[in-house]
Image (cartoon, rainbow, N blue to C red; front, side, top):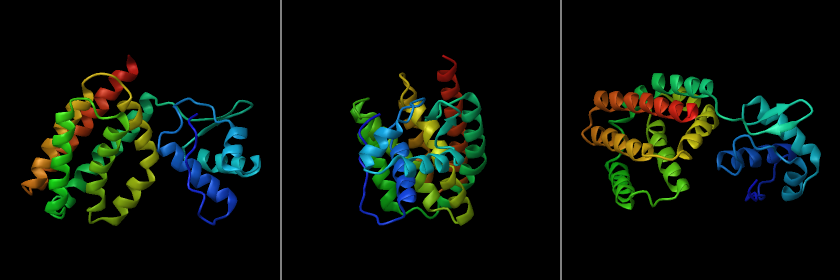
Length: 222
């Protein structure tokens, strides 16, 4: 486990604060898939007793962030083929419509910002850190969610965020050219958005998500 870097400034109930802090640490990739959570170490780093840590882990287990195994403890779930299929089935059913709705509404300045980011990423030729690439990928997909007109879709995808992140984080740790391929797919989607072509952008997003699911399953099988 990496050293936790957490904000302790919020004055909330202790158990809730520990839950939110651990949730953020998991989403920030501070734990490895399959890693056992050392409750004593977490309690020491957060300067709390084991009780709020145990309560937080129960909440996180109910939301799918951790897995509690009897007599063994709490673990960060590993990615399975079922996880990949479930996550991407939802994404390729919903996100193309999100893109369709958001395409006419995304400001030109944001389109330009992502175009410049993608150009920098392409020019770097694999020199960006895993964290930078992952953050850019998350920001790109979040761009459409933020500008989607259907607030319920927005809320639904936000609730799935940790499951999406777990699969995405697994993919980004794999070697190969899949990150470059994904970047080219992102660029094509962005070009359709720049041309204000919602149907084309939605079609390209669906293709991108199906390709991503296939690539991740390949790595899992290997």
